[in-house]
Image (tube, rainbow, N blue to C red):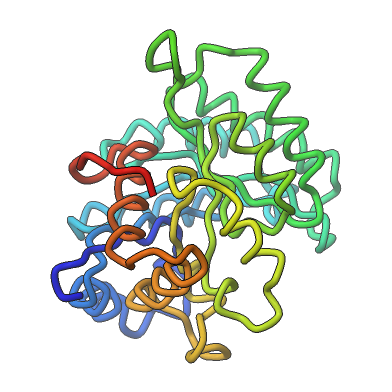
Length: 279
């Protein structure tokens, strides 16, 4: 597998867990065949750090945004600066944005408003979004659909098919929800959760949608895959997730790597497109 390359479509390299060895973590990922790393942010300060890191490392790209946990702290000035940051050439999406009703870090109505405001930023800048949803899939889909109706030209590539509008990362919904997300022209993405023994739902969704609708991610430093579960996760573990997805779908891991890498190109414009065979 030395010649197989991957993309980690979602990780948090700016997290404090990497402060002691961030450059080494990136180097290990590259040595493990991870060609590109997409780093979403959680607030304005983190967005600035994500851009700075992407400027430093050719393999790293940034997303800027306010996570739903931080929504109550986001000011209008913050959102204006995020929009300015989003025009940086190393920024490929607005994210990580969305709704999280599992924790009570911000009122639901505030989360919904900040989510819609950031989709509007993405629409003005014609960027995709990276979506977080936990115990909130219904409202997340509803608000996303409402925003698309307000600007149906967002990400439109041609009359036949709009470009991908984003990704629902660390997907936790069922197969019916995944199909709704895909119909809106979003990818669904899976981290190391699919390697866990009690991950039947995620594995069912990963098996039930087309490979052309899937991305790989680590969500580092969280959710380390088996056999590293319980330790700090890092992007060098993405091949383990790819192998599990390959097993779930009875495919060669090379097909999983090639298709998911193409999907990253299609979504974020990162890398070089390769012709795909249906998988």
